[in-house]
Amino acid sequence: MLTLCKVTDSLFISNSKSACNENLLAQEGITFCVNVSRQQPFPNVQQVQTRRVPVFDDPAEDLAKYFESCSDAIESTVRSGGRCLVYCKNGRSRSAAVCTAYLMKHRHLSLRDAFEIVKTARPVAEPNAGFWSQLQKYEEHLQREHQVDSSPKRTSQ
Picture 1 (tube, helix red, strand yellow):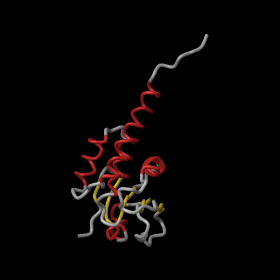
Picture 2 (cartoon, helix red, strand yellow):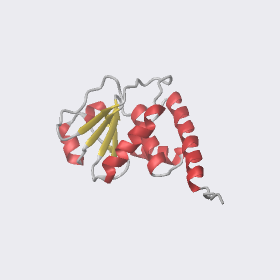
Picture 3 (cartoon, helix red, strand yellow):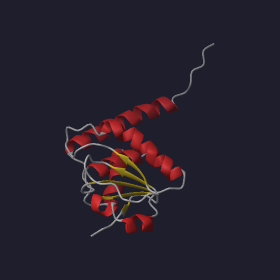
Picture 4 (cartoon, one colour):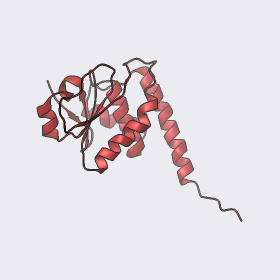
């Protein structure tokens, strides 16, 4: 069944077959697609911006190095009134990890809460063990960053 699963009002997740269905993209008003694969095709729609994250669904792949740039690109799309679709071949591991990272960074959610939202939207979502471990490290990174941001600023006299 072809479907785009709604993670938030402006963020969707799917497999590549659904992502390349022009009717589905138009129906949901998708303006930006993040293709988290090395080989899956892009939708053939001129008004949709695209970004490729060239990783295989392999626990040894470094997906974490794309968490920040993808999350910021998704947030930029959302803030400008657009709607974003993140997909990979099956819409299970890579795309779920990127959506989870976005929710952690821009919605300030814990890894568990962020993944719960993704899993509710797309029940087959299941990042592989390597990506899950990278998400755990990313959560620690975001927590440290948040502590620095919220610590009182010292003024020198």
